[in-house]
Amino acid sequence: MTSDLNIPALPTPDRPLKIGTRGSPLALWQAHEVRRCLMAAFDLPEAAFETVVIKVTGDQIQDKALREIGGKGLFTREIEDALLSGEIDIAVHSMKDMPTLQPEGLILDCYLARADVRDAFVSHKYASIAELPQGAVVGSSSLRRRAQLAQVRPDLQLVEFRGNVQTRMRKLEEGVADATFLAMAGLARLGMQDVARSAISPEDMLPAVAQGAIGVERRLDDARVAAMLSRIHDAPTGLQLAAERAFLLRLDGSCQTPIAGLAVLAGESLHLRGEILRPDGSEVIRDEITGPASQGASLGETLAQRLLARAPADFFA
Image (cartoon, rainbow, N blue to C red):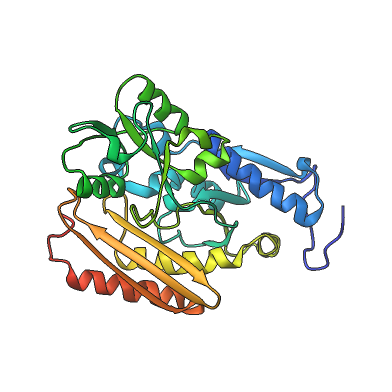
């Protein structure tokens, strides 16, 4: 093990760094990827880390839509409680599941390099949205995906479709729906890229804010962990998410609101596209903005304000 002058006490097998995560195969992959990055950055053995699986409300209640039981915080609340209590040292999250504000005492300032941002079209019968016959049944728990699909194919039947990747694939096999959508990044991380019949271009289906990104949350006053995480933080992803999450925050985005957004870097410049939709897909408002990447949060807020200015008061009703 190499020493690091900036970090007084690196974790050891006797005093491991505790990584909190949900228990799904994808969540565990993400936690282990954070562990792998930290092991490589500090030449640490795997035994210097402990993975702590925490049951969250969103995973335990599968028979109701997220918007009916509380939205995005359902995937993070118990993990954040464990972080605040000291039960764990860091928490690993899919960033598209994260609320825009963290509880007092916690901070999100470490992101791994972002993966594929696209949505995947998944079906045992059809190769693309265009191939779906009139009245086909599509399952999705995402209000964004449902609204985007209803906007281009109002003839389709949309049904609630919750659960991890494996659960959703089983539901397809059981005939609950003819097709569904998953994130390409999640499929790739599980080695299941072949499950996708097609990857949908962001030009055709703008992804969720922060889709494809993994975030690591920590206690604000934990200097040791802050120093460790700074070594694995991907700065370009941080710039993208600063813009996207500021956009979402200004729109008061939650699982009850169909919102999509994507920031793309080009040198020192950042281009942000965003859209808001009526939940039934009957109307969509889009816009985009370009500016210095260092001002991403300001760009995100400005773009959100533009969309809100064009939206009638009952737009999200």
